[in-house]
Length: 379
Image (cartoon, rainbow, N blue to C red; front, top):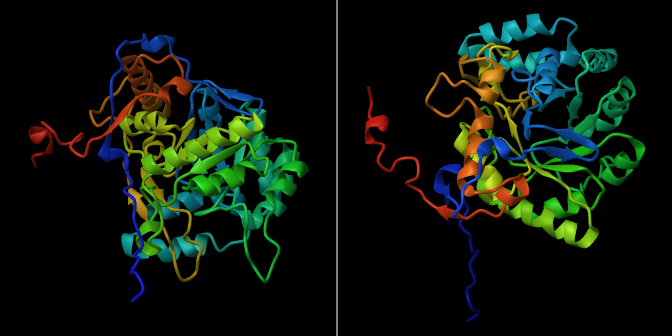
């Protein structure tokens, strides 16, 4: 009888299952360097607002840039489908729960107006802000040149799962090597969660990789498709790919952990796991300046039969500046994200993000519940 061999599974970890170990020395948090570099661009904070219609519009992208970070405008959202996006956004936020999904499918079924791509980019640039835009691989060839010509500084190519090799009998997929050569701006690609996929993407010549499949608060990909890897493990694996690529090529390609963040502690853990920056959605959807007005929704609704996102109510808790830098008015860790990161680096005794990658972490499933019975008790 042939030996029976079953599939083996390895353990993976999310934010609530790990903790950061304090260092043997401490550092003044104010003296930590948290700069993010994407090619020749440098940002004073390593936090990016996600390319989602409830999070980033022209105004919030401008504000995010002025605060030192980066906001990414979705080139396939309401900003480029409608000349009056504020009215469409208001309709989405007012819709009753039973009608949200069909409404979103209808909203995103309207064609993208190419003239609006350039207009939105130009509006951001005229304000003196860094302009980042995002498109799905299927539309990148058409939209990327328009955005670049209008003055965009960074292109994000995003989909639920992105790989360097795409197999199709019906069309020729997006070739990242060709895309990079055709544009004069940095190209960041995602999303992926594995060592091998991340390494292959980096070898195409891109300038950054987004890490994460399905962790977003408004995303239902994990429930609908069953795919994804918890963010700590995904970040660790992709960070290993980044380091291997640097050893082989001499070029450092930043990774950006995208999604699943609820509080400052999650962000700190992502950096300890090896990320160079984080992309945040639902937390920024709570800003007074957010276009979603206290709501947040996924971006996979255009699929006519299999929407993989939902509208959620996140509320409005403070200004974007308050969420980033404080002073905090809440106790759940969702404000003063930069203060949290600098403080965590301080207690670990590190002075920059690269050093933060080396701090010790432990598996700690009780990290958010140990001793917290009063906080967890129902009112």
